[in-house]
Image (cartoon, rainbow, N blue to C red; front, side, top):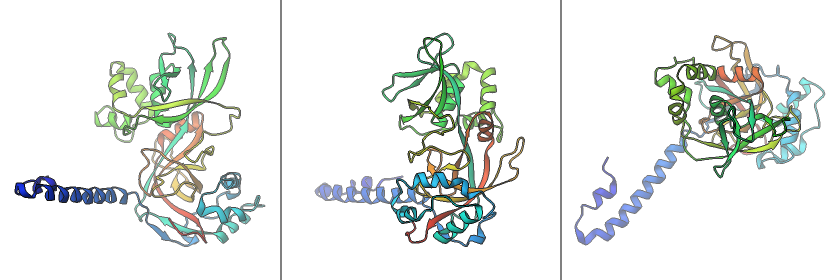
Length: 348
């Protein structure tokens, strides 16, 4: 397309200075317009709703989320400050928990009537070493590009890049093994591209069967294409090592709070602010099928991710361990949800 400055620069030489000024002004206007268009898709359309609109409302064990609410309220975001001051220590039961939420919050349908997408993530647990060896040859990098630790499996390293954090069974020089955490410490600012999606586009995997297990199985039969698979995702994540004194504590999300299995979600913060309480309506993934029983519960928007874009898009934190790995790998569910917002606070 012919840019405005190309048109202006075709004027007479005596008008070059004025034309250049007009060209810069037009370019600035176009840049602003493009930025507004790019961000518009991520802005949520919040529609006022009734509590009766929320499928399954009242059936969730809302009192189980109270410790996370109270923790988050120790450093509340501005819209939640007044609400947090009134948050009771703990509800007696489910009925009291729902009654208090209904008395202090307003439900808003997020997005349009069309369902969005719910995916899943988890915290892997992998073997690692501080020094390279015949077994441990795949480095995890620090922000300065130096190796932090070494893994023994290239697919596990790629998995850790996607998940953003993980647990490592660290073999020390004296033979001791301890459980540590490697946490996200930055990236190279390149766009993320799904390696499973790349394999589908290459015809190596079929649509709907692109899981990490399938990626690993494909790589077993095509080890010569490892470098090509790695190059499919230009984003490189850097890590830092952290202690893991309590194995029942999840990794820290974008808000800085530990993530809670099946209660924390990653969102697009341009559409759903971090810290928002949400009512989620989806289905649990079933082995060999798209969906099983309903998944309807309160969740907290405590994390974000480069692939999570749009108002009705979420990544559901399943936790850690083999079951969490399996659930995260097969989660591709339809999503509807409602933001529960303090009654006295202006909407985003």
